[in-house]
Length: 378
Image 1 (cartoon, rainbow, N blue to C red):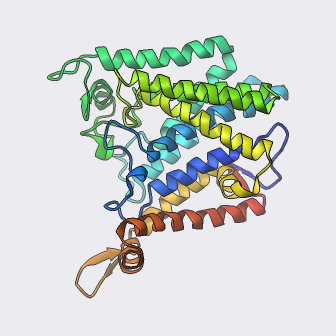
Image 2 (image 1 turned 60 degrees about the horizontal axis):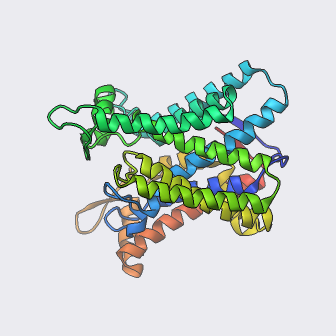
Image 3 (image 1 turned 45 degrees about the vertical axis):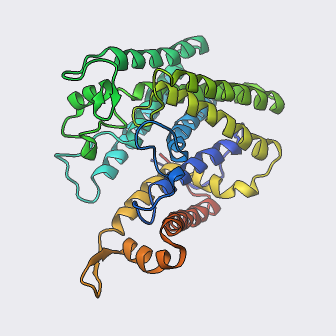
């Protein structure tokens, strides 16, 4: 973890990258912190299995921007003639730290190390960062394009042709698919509440998520080398629409599924990421409308910090129990939701308002760090 208290360098830095990253983190906090898990508006609830909701876009958008960021961060380091050894040490250090933070989140506050869930959101980010960084440093663009496509087809081959005992080939149902079968073999006893349906951040589905990150890498190449905003926006919109169409086309054979991170899901969400990012790029870096996205920027420069802290605090406020007059026991969050928000706004709106309030509090805290020029990079 690197602590910085100086101005962020603006050399070759695009504010839209920080803003886009921050928007995804804000989205993550909103999605995982409803006032009540029973009352969530459908767009903010992950698809039960096959399908796509607004909530299902947040994670792949973050991996996409990880790929974009790799180009800018490592290009700058390479220009300084930094030794490969020190670069690899930095990559390994960051990978291990992200992975350990993810495991810490999984086991906090009970710290059941024996049955700990090994994989998770930060763990997948760590693996994608590690592998894509090494690929970026050691291969040229044609090889990278080949590998991004190869990962998709290897994953498809596994899902279609790996035999599942008592099930067969080519199934994509909950707990009855090749990814779940192989992950259970590798991670049995360490998947938490995903033991039955399969690990959503498992090893097998990390393959297409690598492609998501590498597609971000290609966008980063274009952003860095192309000096024409109009050409950049046109290219991103063109390939974004192409990605959406290819994803929908592939879904005929391989359903859109976030839990499995299917190829159709990969292409569709990458296409949407390109389209949305082109809007961020146009508004922020071309028209210079930075003020309207300042909340996203303050999230984006301390992204991992706020993600980890928001989860830890959310778990902590669920620990104290309060006995009410009716004899029932409630934690702090439930008391606030049931007795203040829900009676005023109704169940669904109150649930969303709680998530927005919680996210706003973290935005305020990150704003203080931003104003003090405190940036904690993980």
